[in-house]
Image (cartoon, rainbow, N blue to C red):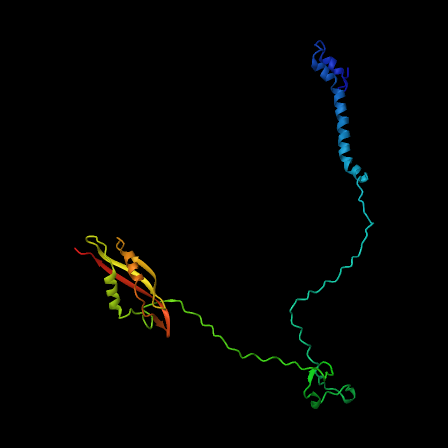
Length: 266
């Protein structure tokens, strides 16, 4: 007996004498129909996927581009801009008068029969301007003459020298009335030493002798405590005016340094 494996005859031989109610028999019995259905459905899907671009190209576009050709263009006339007239403005200067002008002809070497225009003579060029064409001036025009430069007083601006000079490079050093020794004596007589036993050391002070002889910018560079620096500032503030220093014949500001030696009584 010849068997056809496509048909279900072989199932009866395989399951002969076995339980055909079992699901394996029914599954194999319906396998042929399931395979054919799957093949048909797969073929349809594959054919649709291949033909989809062609079908899409044949379909008309759903959205048509709408072009509005009804466009109206209206011309608007803009009023000319009014020029603002500034008040209290001087009138514009009159235009320069016309002056006789003689056309200048460039000299060219040519044959006698080719000369079309004679060059101007030297007499014609006297008191005339040379230009590209001949222009007749206005003999009745008013000549404008530039106003001469005024001869008022000239103020010289002199920049004030406020630099602070050092005593080492100054031409005329500042001086205390009566000499520097009297300055030391003034400081010694007015300086009040703190009442501290064994107090000893130096107070270094700097100050600026101004152009009027007064002392400003008093600074204590170093002191020994107990109010020694503040006392030095107090004494210098009550100091009389000095004779100011000079540089290039002019009074200038000069920096001065002062060491004060302090030694309390034992």
